[in-house]
Image 1 (cartoon, rainbow, N blue to C red):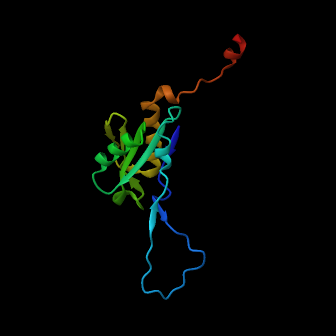
Image 2 (image 1 turned 45 degrees about the vertical axis):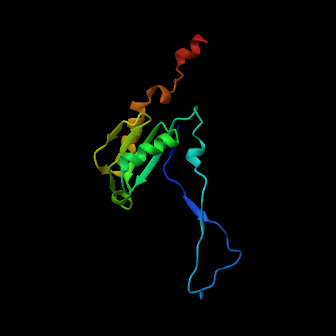
Length: 141
């Protein structure tokens, strides 16, 4: 299972300064370029259960549905970036590959993380179950 919580950065400086940029310039232009989309680059990995996050400021469910399709995710966890960043509580919406959305009630972030794991176990039991070895297994071998 791969859970990618957030992009480190969507953009980076196009040029790196070789020395300290001193004060004194009235205007400083900063040119940015896109970074690699790590989660998107793993779209063809069928051996992984791929879970992404979508922190959105508008059109939450629509934007998250688009992202789950573009990146070929198994599930995306969407939340309102304005209401969540810096807050102790969150409300998350789980959206699967078919576009079905399930919103969990607002709760403390630690409880939301626990609810997410429980939801993953419920939604993907066959992909997340591990065969446990028992003493009986060893005796029959």
